[in-house]
Length: 509
Image (cartoon, rainbow, N blue to C red; front, side, top):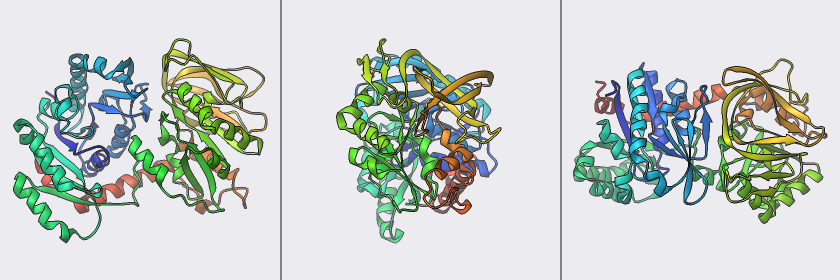
């Protein structure tokens, strides 16, 4: 058994704050001098990341690793499920594609999967002092108990103490906590050491009797009442978080650059745009109505886990025609990964890599076509921009590739950049294309806008009063900004959690 001490954070449902709390606890432990790492046996998300070794993993564990001050590794998320339809997912096992499976087919592989999950856990446990583990969804899905890989079954395998998190903002928190405890088996209840009530607004004194009732009824302590916050920004990866972004009111002042991201049904890696969203001079909106296209200065087509299906969606919803009209009227359109593929004349999938669709017409804004292939490219890359309007002499661009397609230019057209290093190996590979007028461009590289210089130069092209973005209106370093957010989160949790008691539960004191 691994040497590390551990703690499992389970929840009463999805989006109760498990991922954020794990990130915050990782930063607290890191600040206190512990070698800590996150772990989630199985994650379901369309936001993923490529490690330096070329392995694919969920973004939530990447964020948690950043909070812990360590390099992300596939062992932190040994199984990643990327939904391709309502009934099936692409399964990523220890960083590599295992295949596309229905839920029934996937659960049929459980014994083999458990063995490999435990291998990953063991390697992490030998390397770090503390592992902060995260569950998925509700911990009381009794219909899935026998198939569980990530909640109590994982906690039981490694004898992890459990803290149950509930979201008071959605209501019914007392019934949710007590009801979950009633549905747990005796062995599961024995692992639960306390509760965290998350996303509280208002006067804590009004909640005192309810918390006392929970403690008396369950004979477990409430370890914290975490107040709702809006001034700390931690990337989130699931569809619930994206839906909240779509619904949020946006400030579209005339002084801001208005950037719109198309909300595709199978949108992936929308964290690509977090750095743009935090720029003071940018108003970023996720949308899916054709008429909203004409409110923007810049339209971005994001990545997709099902490019042909989402491209067909653009045509059927009238978004394709709206985007083309936007360009004709002088607008700029950018595509990233699957969105880049959509900008060409057509996307082909003769082998059925993503769906039953074999060919869908693209937007025809770039003179290229794309064919999906069976082999997935996953790599961290270094590159240099070839398009001078966004390039700075000698500047290195970093990003990562996750795609199963190959795009081919059909005419004379300018490549966007040249990859100089892929997964640590020197290469010379051209990526992306730019239209002759510079108003249509795209790339396979995720994380492009995290490069501060490129992001600032892009925004400057749309500023109305100045040729350059004023220094006071820039996010100077996205990396340093993220570090500030993790520290703010840790400070917030220290104010609202009984950290000493949590350390005792872990076995650190």
